[in-house]
Amino acid sequence: MDIKQLIYLCNLERERHFGRAAEASFVSQPTLSMRLKNLERELGLSLINRSNNFDGFTAEGERVLTWAREIVSVYQGLKLEVESLKHGVNGTLRIGVVPQCSISLPKLLKAVQERYPQLDYRIAVLSADQLLEALNSHTVDAGIGFFELSTLRELHFQAELLADEGVELVFHPHHFPALEQAEALTIAQLKDLPLCLAEPTRYFRRYLDNHFRDAGLQPRVILETTSVFQLLQAVEVGLGCMIAPVGHLLESNLQQLARRKLDIPPMSRHAALVVAEPGRASPLAQHFFDELRRHLSQ
Image (cartoon, rainbow, N blue to C red; front, side, top):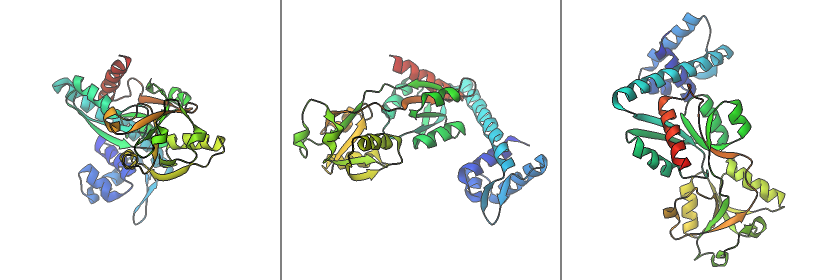
């Protein structure tokens, strides 16, 4: 058994396709298949369900995958640690982020860049449940999203809770002049407004839908999308109004737009920056987490 075989196995889990897994591993498909068959022979176990195409992993394969993810994560962490010892903190950090969290990620990354200018980022936009799975399977190094505090404790994650400053309605005052008032809106006052919201699979949208339902309201949702960019454009042209956590958008995103606080109970989950527990987080993730914790404390 060698580390490349375990990397190929993890790539196959991620890609769910032999050809794409081979491309991700920078080898030919026959080479990848041969190395994985050698691994099965060495272990004396069938790891992969094979038909004409990839058909998932066997029960034994799932158990081996759990170890493979851990070993590959440690191996990649070791490589990054060696690089950081030679050249300082550098490399690519994989971040999973939930849309419409209560802080602007690029603003945080800019703060980290001042300390670690050679650090690069690959950002995946995920649902809250997908983010938790990605953190557990080590397919992302850090996550910013909504979490149950009990889950963070059970999984021994390092977590920095992000400030919850409430929720606001974002609108264009030219198209919705009647909304330009100082007092907070009640959820009942949104009844007849055209709303531009995230898709119902997103945690923030489910949170809003629960409160609409509790209030006995059926909101008029004129646009649904997973793209925050599309939501903002819809607001800018006056198609509708957007509901967002305070702090999620930069001031520059709101130059022609107005905001009004929404009187709504807080979310049951907490927005947090999360990495694996000390010793299991990759060196890049730990440096990133420590620097952001220092920045947020100031």
